[in-house]
Amino acid sequence: QVQLTESGGGSVQAGGSLRLSCTASGGRSDDDYMGWFRQVPGKEREGIAVMRLGGGREYYADSAKGRFTISRGGAANTVSLQMDSLKPEDTAMYYCAADTHRYKIGPPLQPRTYNYWGQGTRVTVFS
Image 1 (cartoon, rainbow, N blue to C red):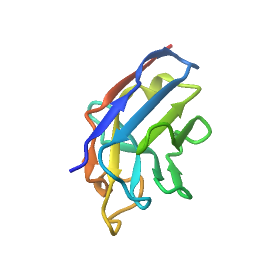
Image 2 (cartoon, rainbow, N blue to C red):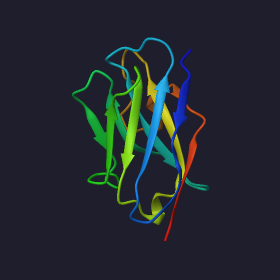
Image 3 (cartoon, rainbow, N blue to C red):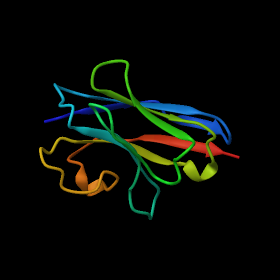
Image 4 (cartoon, rainbow, N blue to C red):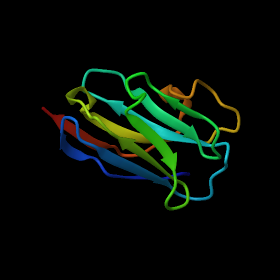
């Protein structure tokens, strides 16, 4: 069982920045993927940015490219999402997820690929 602990989030004015962090419990494999998804009421959860913990592979949603950066660092098994140039449409509940399947079962930005989820942290961007 993997527990994901999220931190960060909050409220910020449009154009500002926020940083989200997520730490996974236990020892993790370099082949595991971790990343961030977001969801607004009435819409499906969407993948924003994910990465292979061992490095070498990162994936971003089109809406995140050029503004968000995912990275591994700080504490062990921690993945952070630096969000810059935030827009009101980035307002959502953001969820950390981990894919520990030995054999990947779906595309990296698809929620169904991931078998562990955090509780979520809210991001509000006001104009």
